[in-house]
Length: 171
Image 1 (cartoon, rainbow, N blue to C red):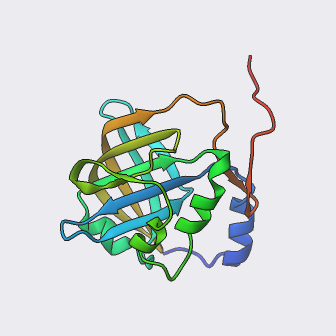
Image 2: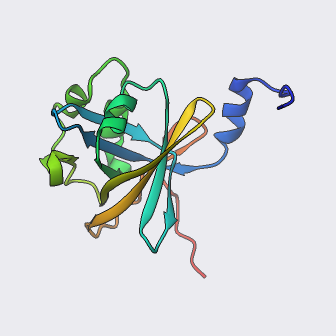
């Protein structure tokens, strides 16, 4: 049994916000054509062999049922000049199809929407779904990658706002 935390959820969110994260756009489509399009900053690679990634989504997200009903998922790594896509895909009250309105996309395998203007896309099949607290961890077996070389930095999120890396540190 867990002890009661000595903080509230707003304080926890503020503390976690001190860790910068990348920003991705996730798309999926069910067999009947229902589309999911959402902004996700809880994305990470899991394994190189086999290629596997994960992202997290709240279990009460309107996109959650579509993600569960989709075999194929695409994760798009956004560039710093794609804040408009990140904001649009994070807009509550819009369906996945409405979020795609006005956004350049093409159908990929099984019809999953692909955003060709993003610097990198990983597509694959949903592997595992793990419930933890009010979120669900979705693991994806990656079977395709698309990379568009660019000098534009990736979009990041830090302390409640979009940020751009100020410099690259090399050794």
